[in-house]
Image 1: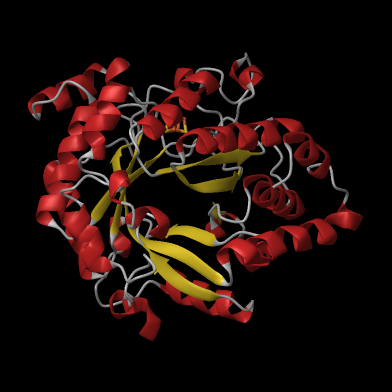
Image 2 (image 1 turned 30 degrees about the horizontal axis):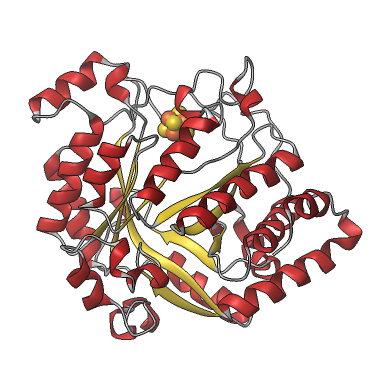
Length: 380
Ligand code: SF4
């Protein structure tokens, strides 16, 4: 592994020396992860699109009354989970805005009608319902959490996540991406990740690049993740996500990071985090160039999900997965399906609530990956 200072130098690698950097990172990945590249077959469950924060790049959040503003009912959650399970999905990825009850009386009324005071309480109930009514394994990504909520959610999630995004406090200042986003204060997010470590929750985190941070600040965020993982051993994957401009967001005119910049950051993440870490970049955020990220040292493509309920059609396989399988093979790698809990944690009982262990054990082989007999997408 390289030092924090070395990583700060390497993140400035010029284009004409980029290939050397990528090759070095790919070597380190090969040493730790070989030529297996993983993904999780998931269903995206947008539990609520309401959020009290206003991040400059967010395409997800809505205010009450806006088109697309919605909090899913228990029936909708069950229908989505069961439809996904019929297609062979294993993960229910619960995504939601942060603490909408703090900002919106309509949302407090919704929660009250369902017997809850907080969105995190409702989330826990929906994870429990998913476990009861479907074969899916929940992975919740609900924003900043305290110790009590983390402990309660651990009982009904095989892993959880929170993107650190950045450690640059200045991005919370006026005119920056996290102006008006109290839950993006880096110290609050670092605290949640540390508490998850204390509670032995397999945890997904990562950085978001292109939101106004400097290259050095990107490295600082990766180093902060490494420090927490060295302390608690719970970070199961680190995502390098690139900002994409969209018409309806406040940052619609901000420049997107180039593909070279993304590849450079993936490579530095691999070198800083070492051969054993799972490093991921979402393929759908780089369109046709995405297979080239394999040369930068990643070993996971993240969760692949139909984007909306309309896409859940049991007659049709998910075309994204067939394409991913073929593109990964062309680059000389083998695609394998993993659960929302990575193999190295699926095989360590201390990282999983005991009620969830039999369900995980039934799905994985001796390596902790999904049994090949359950990888239905292989024959597509
Ligand atoms: S916290 Fe920010 S990124 Fe997350 S849903 Fe809210 S506005 Fe969007």
